[in-house]
Length: 229
Image 1 (cartoon, rainbow, N blue to C red):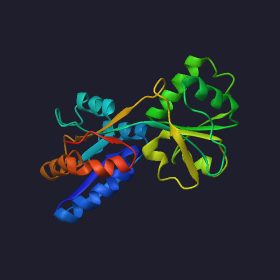
Image 2: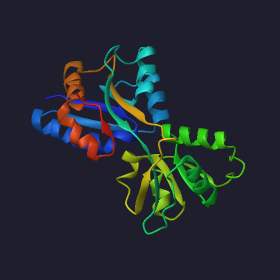
Image 3: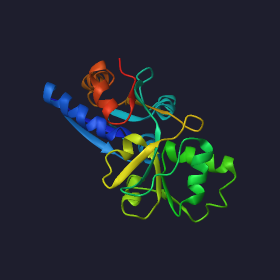
Image 4: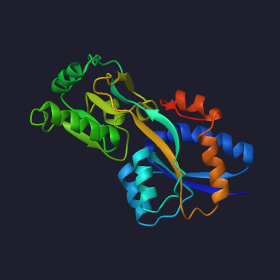
């Protein structure tokens, strides 16, 4: 039986772990997940690290295909992920019903935690667009090596912004909701086959399973809207 290695950013982690447990039980294969921040995943693959599959934001999968690291035509979309807002358990929940309300919540917060991934990039662009970067100077904490909800759970930040799929597993926080439609940015997460995959046939079978209708219920309950099948 094969051992498959899958390098990926954190957002799809919870769905991946559940789905690969199902795949491994059904096939007898063994799947080894390697999780890292999105920037580091890109660096590792571009530097020549060889794995079977890569999972991350769709535009980054396309970039790796263009760079010749992933197989052209292999991109398989898995789910669409919204950005959520979290507070510590028991804390007052701010109004996030509109972009202006989110702006007010940011200005009222003592400390704001956010990620280095697509949600963090989007939050930075919102703050810049609203012209409140100077007002928030010293209050923004970009989190590395843990979810943005972790410092919120510890009481080190009043608000946490990240993909809902990454906030859901964090104990000690409450998800207030998703960003409102006028400022929401949905990210599509996809999987691609590495050009030098040691076992391309088995890796393709796993990729097809992750992108199948059978995977949709797990992807949905783990915080994404599935794009399977």
